[in-house]
Amino acid sequence: MVTELTYTEHLFAGTRDELLAKIEKQLKPKRFKHVQRVEQTAIALAQMNDVDVEKASIAGLVHDYAKQRPDEDFIAAIKQYHLNPILLDYGNAIWHGVVGAELIKHELGIYDEDILNAVRHHTTGAIYMSPLEQIIYTADYIEPARDFPGVDDARQLADKNLAKAVAFQAKHTLAYLVENGKTVYPKSIDTYNAWVPRYPNV
Image (cartoon, rainbow, N blue to C red; front, side):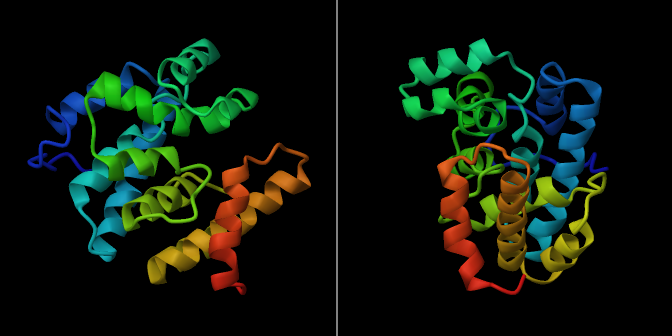
C-alpha cells in the first residue's frame, strides 16, 4: 500500500492520511479496503499512462465516498443541486457516482473537475472520458479483489491499452445488465456506442 505519497497540488486541503480519515468515517471496513485497492490500481495505471498520480490517488480513494449513504441524502442532493430529475428514477448504483461527486465537492472541498468527472462516470462511463476518468473506470473494475469471468482479460488489456480496457468493460457491463434484467442508465448505452465500435474485438 502507498503510505508515502505526499499531496502537493492542493487538490484536497490536507494530507492523504487526513483524506483517508474522512473517507473511513463514511464507509464500512470492506468498502474502505476496496477504495484503497482502487487507489493502488489507479496509481499503477496512471504511471503507465503518464497521468497525474496525485489525481489518480484522490479519485481512487473518493470514488465510492457516497456509496453507503441513505437514499434520502441522494434525493435531497438531486433537488438541492438542481441535478437532472431523471436521476430520481434510479438508485444507489447510479447515485453514488453522479450525485456523489456533488457531495465530495461540498463536503471534502475537492473541486477539480477531472477528479469529479472520474467519480461521476466510474460506474456508467461516458462518451468522452479523460485519461483519468478511464483510469478510475477501469481500476474499479479490475482491482485485485475482483473475481468474475473475464476480469483477467480486462487486466491484461489495461496493461497494454487503456482505451481497449474501457471498451471491454463497457461491452461486458452492458451485457451483464441485459442478461440479468437490470435497468440500464442511458449513459451506459452511450458509453457502449462510443467505445465498443472502436474496438469491436475486445
